[in-house]
Image 1 (cartoon, rainbow, N blue to C red):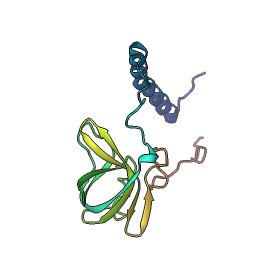
Image 2 (spheres, one colour; image 1 turned 45 degrees about the vertical axis):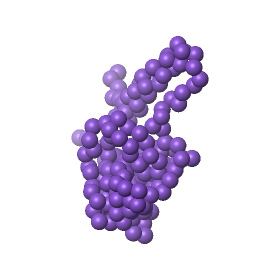
Image 3 (cartoon, rainbow, N blue to C red; image 1 turned 90 degrees about the horizontal axis):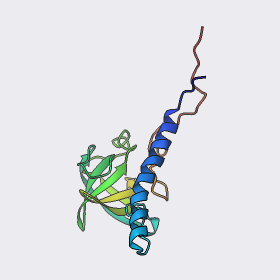
Image 4 (cartoon, helix red, strand yellow; image 1 turned 120 degrees about the horizontal axis):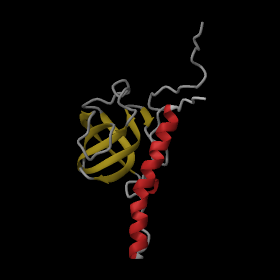
Length: 162
């Protein structure tokens, strides 16, 4: 009997495999050196380190440079200087509707993460105008539904047949 594997299962399996590869070298190095435990993922979202920034959007970046996280980025001019704010992989489709355009004032809550190509402010929530938009949950995982993605419920698609 042939069984079709769902795309969601394939994505979960791929992520699990990638995570196991990412964690394994660190565990091996720790075992070999006998040193104290190092953080498993220094880029993990740590809600205890959240800060709030505010400023004016100077540029919308839909394709970030290599070495930065994928998804929509906005360059924000703050009192401390220019900041690259990452808005996640699902926000780009509705950004303009929500008022995320060059020249808009924005307030973002999130954490600064270090990547190969530089530091990025990873936003959990963004406030534009009077609307606060959730980008990620408290653990830092991107949220599709709140940022305008539609939820697909299995079994609601019409089934064809003769």
